Image (cartoon, rainbow, N blue to C red; front, side, top):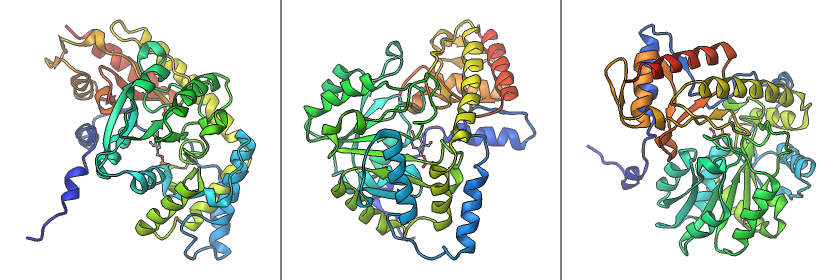
Length: 400
Ligand SMILES: Cc1ncc(COP(=O)(O)O)c(C=O)c1O
C-alpha cells in the first residue's frame, strides 16, 4: 500500500470530535438535542452582501482573482481600519484568505521553524495549538485566570516569553471565555512586548464587534504604534456579518510579513472566491446597523444564560464582555455521580454525561486548555437557551 507523509503525525484531531459525532448520532436517532456548541451566528448574511455577490457574478467577476485578494476588497479593508482604528495600511499590507483561519495558518507557515514556540494565552481557540503542531512548532501556554476575568496579566505574559518564542497570539474578545480587553489592558500588554523584539504578535480580532460593555473595539496595533512592524491583525466577516460560509478573512500588518504570507498562500490556493470577496466588501462598506442589531440580541442572550447558570448551585459563570460564548466553572459538580450513574471526575465527563442524559451538547473546557469549565455558545435562539439551561439545572440537581 502507498504510504503517508510523516507530517500527518503532526496533524492532530480536535479533542471535541467524539462529542460532535455522538451529538449527531443522537439527533439522527430522533433525540431532541439542544445544541450549544455552535461557533457561528444564527443570523442571516445581510441581503446587500448577497446582492453584491450576485451582481459581481453577473458582471463577469468570475475569473481567477489576485492571490492576495481583489483590489475592491483590499480597499474596503483599508477603509475599515482607517475608519475604526485610525490605522493606515497600504494595499501591499493586506492579505485576503479563505477565512481568518487560513490567514493565521499562512502566518505560521511563513515564519515558524521546527521547535519554535507559539505562546497561546489560555483558554484558547483549539485551532491555534493544532495549527502550531501542524507546522512543526511547539505551543506554549500562559493562563488567563478566571479571577482576572480571563484576561492576560502583563506579568504572566512577561514570564512566559522565552528566546524560542516566535509568536504571541492575542484573542480578545476571546473564544471560549468571551473576555475582552480595554485599551489600557492592551497598552500594558504592548509595554511588555516592546521588551521582546524577537516575537511576532498576532491579534485575532475575529469577535471585535461583538462586545457588550459599551467599549469601542480597540486593537493592539492602534494602541501601541511602536509595535507596528511586528503586529499582524486578523479579522474577517464570519462572525461580525454572519458570513461563516463565505470563507472570507483578512490580515493586515507589516509589508514583509504580509508578502511572505501571500506567497505561502499562493502555494495552496489560487486566490479566494471572487463573489465571496464582493460580498465581504459590501458588508464592510455597507450599513452597519445589522451589526448593532445582532449585538443587542447577543447581549440579551448572554444575560439570560449567565443569570440562569448562576442560579444553579454548583456552577459559577463569569459575565463576559464579548463574543457569543460563556465559560461556566463546573468545579462544584466534580467527584459526584450523575442520575444516570456516570462518575463525573472531569469537565469532559460532565459534558459527556450531560449529552447522554439530558441531550444538551456543550464543549468541555479541556478542549480549550482550561479545566474544569464548559463552553456554551449563545449563538442560538432564546427558547433553545432557556431549554438548555433548564436541562443543565436538572442534570446538576441529579448529581449525588
Ligand atoms: C478566535 C477565532 N479566530 C478565528 C476563527 C476563524 O474564523 P473564519 O471563519 O473567518 O475562518 C474563529 C472561528 O471559530 C475563531 O473562533
